[in-house]
Every structure is written in C-alpha cells, then in structure tokens.
Image (cartoon, rainbow, N blue to C red; front, side, top):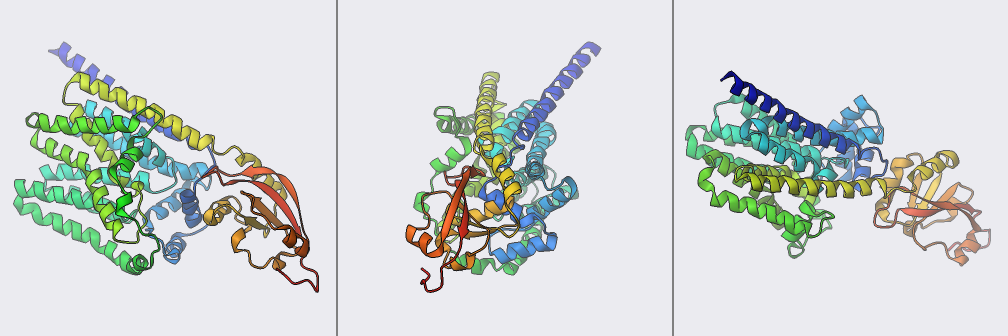
Length: 488
C-alpha cells in the first residue's frame, strides 16, 4: 500500500513539474517577443492615451476622442507603467501578464476541475495559438479580456454546482464589471455565460435563480451609466463605418483563430473543433452532466458571440472585426481540452501534437512580425535623437492616421499630412522634414514659387505596416514665396 501511495505521489510530482514547466516555457516564449520597439497603430493609440497622463487625464482623452473605448484597461496599464517604467518592454509585459494570468488558471482551476491532461492541453494553445500569441504581446486589452472571460466561465462552472457560495458570486460580479469596462464586446460572451448559469440553476436549484439576475443587473448598471456619460448612443448615430453583414463569414473567423504557416492550417483547426463537437455528442453519456453542458458552452461561445455581434454590427455603424469578439477564444480551447482529454489516449496524443506544431508555427509568424518588420527602427531613432529638435515640423504622405504612430517616437515634433497641407508659406524659415513614403511630392512649379530645396538624408522607418511606413527622409529648406509672386 505504501509503495503504491509513493508511486502515486511521485507521479503527481512529475505531472506538476510538467504542468508548471509548460507554463514557464510559454511565459518565456511570450517574453522573448517583447524586446522589439516596433508598434502598430492600435498600440500607438494605447501609448498616446496613457503616456504622460494621470487616471483623470486618460478618462478625458477617451471621452474627447469620441471613440468606443472604455477606461479600465488603460488605467491598469498606467498603474503598471508607474511601477515598471515607460519602456516599450514594460508596455508589452502588461499584455504578457494578462496571458500569464490565463495560464495560471490552467495550472490551478482547470487542473482542479478536470485534471492534469485537460490542463496541459489547455495551457499550450491558451498561450501560443495563433491569435492568442499575438494578443499576448500586443499592447491592447485583449489578453486581459480573454483572461477575464475565461475566469468568468470557470467561476460559473463552479457556481452551477455550488450556488450558495457568496465568494463565487462576488468574483463573478467583479469579473463581469471588469470585462465590460475593458471592452464593450465582452458583453456578448457574458450574455451567453449568464444564460448558461440561469439554465443550470433552473434545473439544479431554482431558489438560486434570482441571484443570476441580481448579479447581472448590478454589473450592467455602471456599464449603462458609462454608455450615457460617454455619449455612446450619439456616437453610434454619427458613425461613418457601415459594416455589411454579407462580408462577414465564419471562414474569416476560423482563419483568424487557426491560420499559421502549416498547409491547410485553418481546415485542420476546424477539424479539431469538429472532432471535439462530435466526440462530445457521440460520447455524451460518458461525461458528467456538468462537464458535458459546460464543454458545449465553451465550444459554442465564440461562434454564437460572433454571430450575434456580426448581426448587430450589420445594422449599426460600429466598426467590427474578428478580434472584437475573441474574448471567449481561450474558453473554446478549454472546451476542446475537456472533450479530447476524455475520449482515448491516441486522440489526446494527436491533439497535443497538433497544438504543439500549431504553436511552433504561430511563434515563427509572431517572431517575424515583431523582429523582421522593423529593419530601420534603430537607425531612425538614432537619427531623430541626433538631428531633430523640439518643434520641428514633419510632413508625411503615408496614411492620414500614421501621425499617431510617428508621435510615439517623436513626441516633440509637429506632423502635417501632406494632402491636407494648405499653406506652405507659413513653413518658410522653419525646420521642416518630409517622410516620403510614396512618390507624391511638391511639383516643380511649387518648389520654384516657394523656394523649396531638399536633401535626401537616407531611407528610414519605424515598422513596415501595409508597405507604407518606411520612407525617404528629406530635409527641406523653404524660403517662402517672394513678394510679388502669387502663392499657390
């Protein structure tokens, strides 16, 4: 008996080492992608909203921008940078922390509820699957909303079994409020999670059903207050972006979730999801009642959230893309892990191999995006530091919104979008630069009238986005139109 007990204890320690070793390995992989200084436009928006602002300033920025943003995640990022500094590495680590929190759920709550095999099959894709690896280092709120929705789902799983635990209701309330105040579209996930809890309690303990409504209403009330304060409904009426439901399809969603460098990766991903659905229904009686209904919820949540969000977006002016509803993506992988870890060992091993190979391919893509799309960034930063001065004017002809990105690296310079430059005369005698991203420059006539000469300082850039953020950097000398010459 003692020998068997010792063997079980040894096996448990080995499994713990494998599980926590996997968590640390995934964490180190995420951190390895944080050393680059290249950012995209959304990350630039995060930086400009937070940098140099206190919590009230962040709130004011969001309200003045008339965007569909909510302040909680930005507040969290600001507190993080107060503690860890303003480096890009620190900013990216805040997103890593959100993914790490999800990994910890896998090594603790998932392991406790469904065992080591399920936890391991969940942890790998939760950190390294294509879309989830990207958000794990992208300076946006998605790694944290994925954690919040995943934690909410697991909390609801336990509440369906133990509805009298007040602590769990408190946790559910806090998670719901936090999710809603990080991203509007978490509401679609919460809607179906609460519906699941309502149905579960209706079948198990109807006297506790009222708690679902109290918790939900209490969480939604401050969110509704924010919608009024932020003038959200007026924004919806005045929005210019109309999303056509006909252009939104599940193929695009599955490509976002599964696509990697592996041939037919999207189809393979759809295949493993289909196997999980089929395994759940074919072996329905093998699963405990709570497990099978929760697994079905996890497998379906992202799909139904996407469908509802797409339908609503089609009749509103809200800009909509797949990542807006990716908050339930880790729960989808949890549903896959719950089912495939219970069919038979060969299926489980094949699933582990699939997520392992998919994760390696995902890492190669992410590594390339982080480190090979910024070939000029160090030289560009050095040039700015050595040659440019506060108050310099930079004309650019890339995309209109790219001053948001440029301003992250050049906060003391003023940017003018070339097509919107209406008065060249006011630039006379000033220090002016031109980011020439495409061959659209002053005509010879304009150059002659305003006395424009220039020197090409070389080819520079910050990050290659849509092939239009690297540029020839021109130093302009604008004398101005002479008296008697009519300005153009």
